[in-house]
Image (cartoon, rainbow over all chains, first blue to last red; front, top):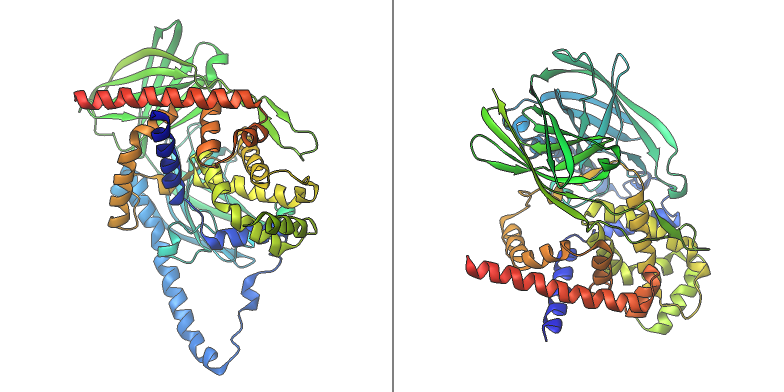
Length: 355
Length: 186
């Protein structure tokens, strides 16, 4: 009897989960056009007023469009306010106004922030979706590459929010780069950002780079705090070392070290308790070989006293390196069983003092 | 869509008729996207998988054998594409629509919160299932594939699919009963 009820609940749950996420019809239309090779030329070329009235209305339309573009440029400010913890709330990001246009695509670098953990860049992208700009490379002018980016925001063509805020062919993103490997960081970073523009009109040949946006700019580095902990705790037969904790207005990063390199794919379920009693769970994890970094977004620079890091369990991820190709399927893979249900309970608990 | 109508569309797609492809995708877009989304829990990843899956479909429709369930074939491509993308190292993307305080208007936010509360326990229970079992549950109760179709879609014997589904329902029921009992005690 319970089966029928449960089956109905599952159907209802899956339906409600997916309904709100469905891409728009415009997205499907554009994607199908790309796939079938119909989207060969920019739709902007087709926009020519055909009547005298349309020519009269054209200036009004341009005023409307420019107003919308102005409104959209504040989206980056909104992103920083909402999603960058103390950086946005305390107005720590530097306002920039650098923009470049290639083949009708304009990328504007609007805001930048740097500390010992991260560089955050707020970019807006406008123009036809026949060209695709995404990601990019960041380096210091003296040639040190900065790893990333982790991209938060909306891809060109995504309409989830821009249905309300801006035309669908705009994108606004906050790129996060990891500066922890940089050496000799002074009070200011002198940076070089390059973003390739790819031809998106032919999906089979979508890696053709038709140009590269290049931005050179300087960003002040906000001082953070690094606490060297170097404590080792053993539980369930596995020793784990808490190496250090890096605290900045954007996030707190906890660096762990496992004794054995083969343990480096194991994901710890980790939480942080502040002197105020506030408890936060890690929002993202980076596996860096035998060490791993766990990020806790938010500004905890004002938390002085005893901090506690707790690893409640270790999760062994599925083995996704093994798969069986279906003969004649054009590269389709059937996955073998994973093992992501293997969990090992701890806890591993670390206490340390933050001055 | 009637079977004969679908067969005609497939025939036209095999002759590279774009309009027919558009109509065919229109008919299955919800099940294709939903399957990808439920497997990835990430709209951006699901969109990426669907783009690639559509490309595979456009390429391989000419070789689709007669009598094969089109829906099962499409879902299989989506499942394979999601799994293939999982294997690729890619730029990590966090869609902002998942940020907790993201809401375009209050009514929507309130509705979402109520809906989320209703399904909270079920969502958590599903997360506790092994990935391959959860995938089978999605294919059965969202994609609405039959057991033989799921077997084809994920390349496992029908007996394995039956046993996974049966174990999944028992396990989900156990977890949900426990969480209800826990809530009553609070």
